[in-house]
Length: 334
Image (cartoon, rainbow, N blue to C red; front, side, top):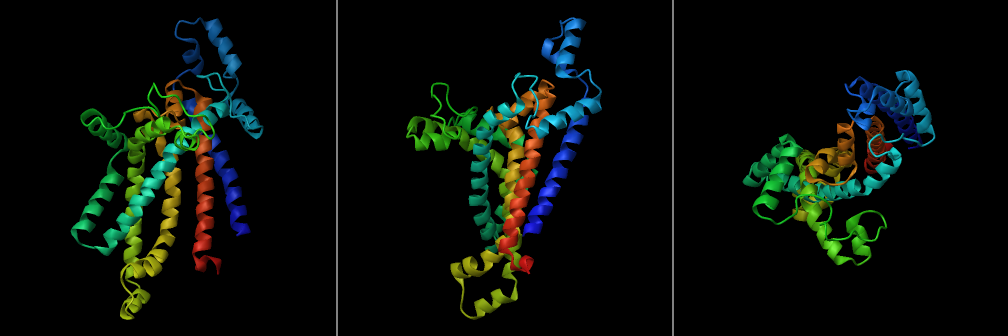
C-alpha cells in the first residue's frame, strides 16, 4: 500500500506541473489583453504600459511562468486581476458553496443511482429495466446547461415551487459561519428559516448537477449486478434455497459494488469540475461561477488557480479511490 501511495503522490507532482504548464501557455495564446480589460478602453498608452508592468505582463512568457511557479512553492496562486485579491483568498471564500452543492449532488447520485441500477438488473428486460436504461442514456447525453434550463423553466417558471438563483433569498441573512456550508451551519446553530431557505435553493441545482453522474452510476451498477448474478456461486446459492433480499445484499451487491467504487469515487471529482456550468446557470456563488466571471475578464491568475486546484483535487480523489479499491478487493492485496 505504501508503494501505491508513493507512486500516486509522485504522479500528483507531475500532474500539477503539467497542468500549470499547459494552462499558463494556453492563457497567453488566447487573444485579449488583461491589462486593457482592467484599465478600460479609454485609458492612454502610458497607463496601459504601467499596468502591464505592475502585472508582470511586460516580461517574457517563460520568465512569467517561472515567477508563477516560484509563487506556487510559497503557496501563492497569484493576484486576481478582476477582484484585486489573492486568488487563494478568493477560492477559499467560494469553496464552501461549491463543495456543498457537489456533496449534495453526490449523495443524490448514490442514493438514486445504486438502487436504480440494482432494480434494473433484477428486473432485466422488463418495463423497469427499459425505463431505467432510457433514463440513464438521457442523463449521459443531455448537456448540463439544457437540464438546468429545463428545471428552471418547469419548477420556477411554471410551477413556482423553487427559486431560480442564489443560495438564499435576499431577505434571509446567512447563518453564523462555522464551515461556510449553509445547510450545516444553519442546522447546527438552529437557524431554521435559513436552513429551510437553503434547502429550497439547493434542490434544483443539486439534481441538475447529479443527473449525469447518477446515470453513469446506474449503468455501472446494472452491468456489475448482471455479471455477478450470472456467476456460479450465485446459482449455487439459489440451488441451496438462498434467495430474495438476503442473496442480493449478502452475495451479489457486495461483489458488484467493487468495480463500481471507481466510478462512484471519480464521479465526485467530476461533480466539482462540472459545477462550473451548473453554478453559472443557477447563479450559485461558488468557484465555478467565480472562474466563469474570471474568464470573461481574462483574469488568467484566477483561471489557472481554479484549474490547478480542481486538477489536484481530482488526483487526490483518484488516490483515495485506488486505496479503497485495494481494501475492498482481496485479489489486489495478493
